[in-house]
Amino acid sequence: MHEDKRKTTIKDWAIDDRPREKMLLKGTSVLSNAELIAILIRSGNNSESAVELSRKILQTANNNLIELSKQSVEQLTKIKGVGEAKALSIKAALELGHRRRLSETSVKSTIISSKQSFEIIHPILSDLQYEQFWALLLNNANKLIKTVMISDGGTTASVVDPKKLFRLAIENNATAMILAHNHPSGQLRPSTSDSEITKKLVEGGQLLGIRVLDHLIVSSEKYISFADEGLMPF
Image 1 (cartoon, rainbow, N blue to C red):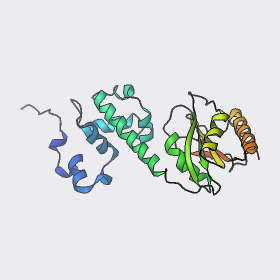
Image 2: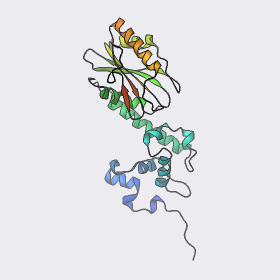
Image 3: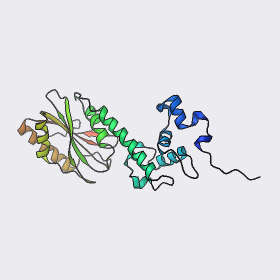
């Protein structure tokens, strides 16, 4: 008697174990990351179900959604069974999650700690593979007015234009600001250029009556605060 070598598909599973049915019955929170991705990609390949393929996709990013979001469509399509349509679905879903986090931090809040600053800027900077320089513009009560991007750099450094920064601050009636940029390498120690640009912007702000309160360097999960470390050149 020949062994039946047909692959087991999601349709062969118990209803409670099928991702779509499971989500309808129990909600999204009970689904694993692999099951959520399986709903996005809808099908597997010749030898794997959608959930099994989704687990393989996650493994390429060390089971880390932040790392997965950094993968390009080209990288994703190198995985057997992941075509352009599946890759685009994954990228679109992760971008929506990113935008949701941005929306959650858009509510104006009073900044009283570096942790609060980090929580606002982290969703913007955490996934990037190149440096960006941002500023949190504040009013007299240290209430957030707006977050603005000052420069969009390459893989190692951002070029900051003080004229652009202070023009944006004046246009938005800001009286204080917090600087932030990311280090894609994950190395949080400030470079010499980080310290120099901080000093230059603090001095420029003093001339204009705009306080530069802090400068954060952000990685995918952590940060360092110049103010907390006593590195602000007051």
